[in-house]
Amino acid sequence: MRKIGQSLVVMLLGISSIAHANFDYFENNRQTIRNGVQAVLSCNGLFTSNRSIDQVFKSELAYLGDRVVGNSDAGNYAIDTAAKWVGVGGGDGHRVHAVFREGIGCVVVPPDWDLADNTSLPTIDLSYRTPTSHLPWPMGDVTESKVLPSYVNETALQAAERWAFERNTTAQNTVSLLVVHKGDIVLERYADGFDRTTRTRTWSTAKSIAATLIGMKVDAGELSLDAPLGFDWLPEATAAETDPRNKITLRHALHMSSGLYPVDSFGMEYATGSGLAYWAGASSIEGMRNRGLIREPGTFWDYENYDTLLAVYALKKTFKSPEEYLTYPHRALFDQLGMTNTLPSTDRFGDFIFSSQVYTNARDLARFGMLYLQNGVWQGKRLLSDEWIDFVRKPAPASSIRGNDYGGHWWLVPDDRKGEVPPDAYSTAGNRGQYVIVVPSHDLVIVRRGLDFGKQGFNRWDLLREVLKAFPAP
Image (cartoon, rainbow, N blue to C red; front, side, top):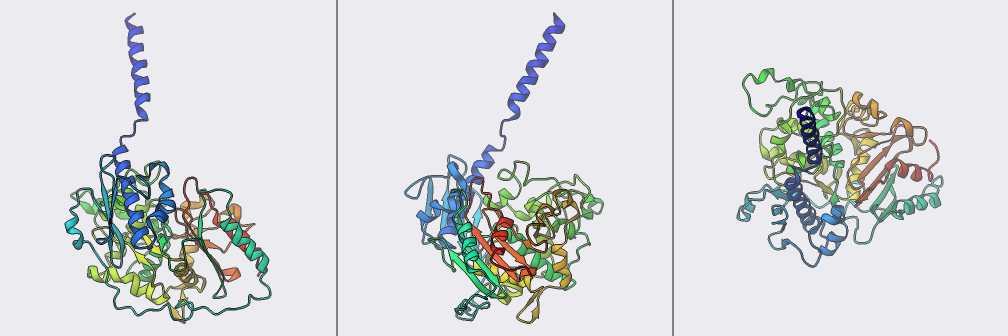
């Protein structure tokens, strides 16, 4: 009888353990991050994209589904249009504020932030710039009306446009589509409420921009792909020189194979890791350095925002002052390409969150794609080496299990699509459907911006397939 009783206790304890295994110990984090997502998307929608609160709730905040706080008329949120901030929540998770800052966009601050301290948040002074919109494309936005080349099938091109905009699900919302062929814009369309000046969030397309800025420093000899990242890890410990994380290189980080403990995947995307930096005011620099090594670097592919931020922190360490660092993306890249509508955002400490938080428009992303299409040369000036272009287009070894679809912070045509679309194509990719597709064999750049939500599912290689129906084989 005693043995039966013991077995029953063990069984009941087991059932109890299983019953509690699904308890979400991170729910408070998720609620706070949810409030931060809404604060950041609303703040940028209003003050970076210059959209109305009705438009923001309809499109930008569709991403939150039934977790959105309130509606465009009222809710547990506050907007100060004079001070340019948005606060969301309180009671249903901590209230989180996002504050617009010149040259950056909206910066999220922690729940205990004193709004009187907003002036201490970082800004980037871009007053040195002269306007470029009056210049001819591609440095400016003045375009000539040109007849399509005779070999381009206009009917097929219009069909591709309809394919992109007229989706069979409400969860896929194309807001802009732009096709550049041989340097000319041959297709450009915007959804209602958007135009060529409208900035929207790039999400992870920002990672490819980060890789470009890092590549410039590698080309200059200030960074090395195969040297250790060269910074201190957390938590601080004695004998830091023996830390196994010192073997992680820039190449590993750009290949998404650092070997560090995952915090942005496996169901934890909006509970820990970069979610706290993106949406709740935590430091992006401290979080990304505070992960233990669980695999040999270079052996396992794991898509982690913090791997990008490892590489961006290595980039930051090449500068002598914060001012140099904050203006570098503009002076080295954006100004060179005429990407004057692009705002890279920082956290509240002035560290770029180049894994996701960049706001820009379709034409600026087309310019970015053209730099790669032209093998790193812009207006006769080389900005990136052939070697760097080759690096981003070569599959990361650890991506072989996925069909060799990832290079150096650019996405590649997976093995199972190479008979359907040109194998030389490569693409940026960001949440909600942000794509810049470069197709050297057809002299094409395709930009698709979206505000998708729910299951999303817009496929960039399908878009490329449809666009290519208008162009002859090379």
